[in-house]
Length: 168
Image 1: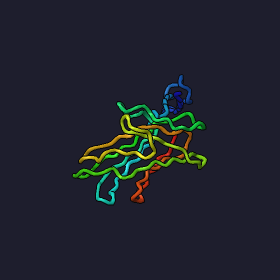
Image 2 (image 1 turned 45 degrees about the vertical axis):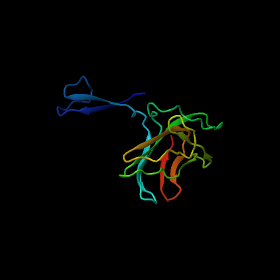
Image 3 (image 1 turned 90 degrees about the vertical axis):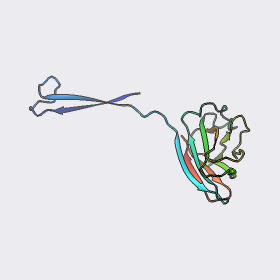
Image 4 (image 1 turned 30 degrees about the vertical axis):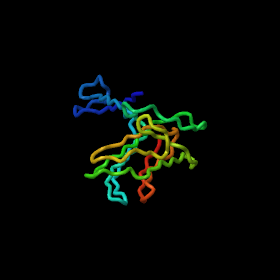
């Protein structure tokens, strides 16, 4: 829904502010809400074996084209879901195994919920896995999370790495 703000500004000619009065002007400033976009966070991490990775988590917005359908969250309480995209890029110059990632989801009220993702037609899981990534290679996991606020965290078991995104 577009909202319009009407600003009446008197001109220098001593007008009364009435648009019919010479020297007065009316400015109509349309204001539209921004298009929905994903909440997204990205961070780099160096794993214990020296692999440099960029991990990006996007919640909301459109799913990545060409990816498998979203995973069902299995939450009877929150049937509405929003898309989730987790991307891992190998920034190094050698092949790197994907570290043990896990997605932890907390509802606005503090209860734990499930966010499930998968690569391609793979299995839906809160623990994304793929074969080692070559230099500059990326893995994209898509899925869904229950709507209704809260947050999703990506954690790496072998480090204190945490990447947090708020859910819509």
